[in-house]
Image (cartoon, rainbow, N blue to C red; front, top):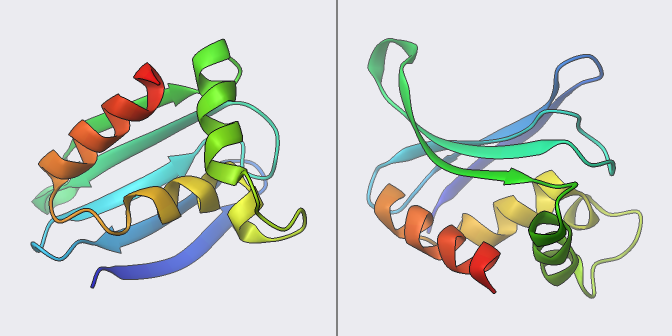
Length: 112
């Protein structure tokens, strides 16, 4: 099972969560605004020396982003972390086995 780190929230920079997937890949889910408002959500595979590979980008204010977020937060308690963009996407990708799996799973989310 994946190891999900803590949610880090910075009012000025947004929020992020680090996840170590079952296959050993480490990813960071980042919401540039934090909280419940739009903005951009990204998922990156982290590598040594701070470099990374972007696996997924979602503009939460676009029609596709709004629809994806609505699907992921459906049934979540309104005041819970699962109802936030960061919490919803962390829950969505935490069961992926690898970074490649995250990339393909998220591509399918935006496509419908």
